[in-house]
Length: 251
Image 1 (tube, rainbow, N blue to C red):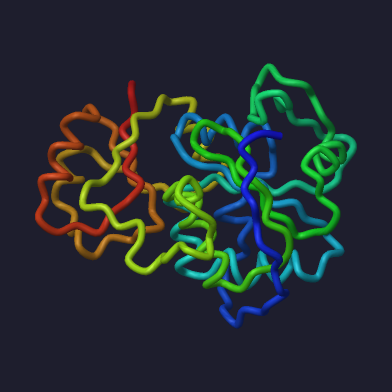
Image 2 (tube, rainbow, N blue to C red):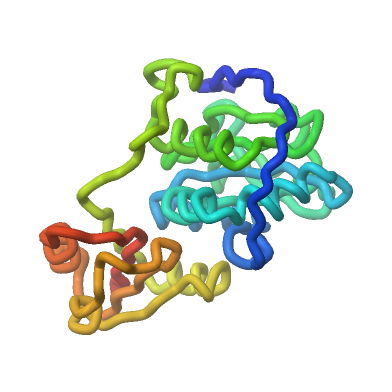
């Protein structure tokens, strides 16, 4: 496959962070094709987590690392997370020549996808950019700080300038401008099925009355009765704000 990153060897390290809500309830999308399709509509990167129900370190990753505050917030803001287990009954499509997800690509079982991506042990994390091109695979278990560093490394496209050993995540990924994404009603419906507890619905007039300094970064703010331009001008005109994930529904 093309565009593959060179990943360093990983030590199995443990995280002590604990979160009460199961990660499956707010992060993981368990369908390869639908996860990529939703990511395409939401303009997000993709993580494919290869796992197994009998894998101890998969359980630790899902119970301790992924739901931790910083990791979960960063994933929600920048990624769609898809979990795959080696199931021969479920299938997903992939274009091997382009090394990218393609809804018209070759259909593989999840078991075959394990083989295609060279997964010899779990957990393993595969990264895709917003164009749904495969970037590389990260084997093994990471503690919270190290996993977050990789998430930022990919999101910032820092792999274009060097490997992760030279990447400094301190102060990374802060942007004064907020990205407002326009979605259609089908995408909204998919979001409602995937993470309904994260969605918050507003008219534009009510939205403008929010306290934009103390908002929950994990929430997805759905504005129904206006257009992307008006919301973009308003939000990016604020002096101080603490918000991500604003979606304007294109009626």
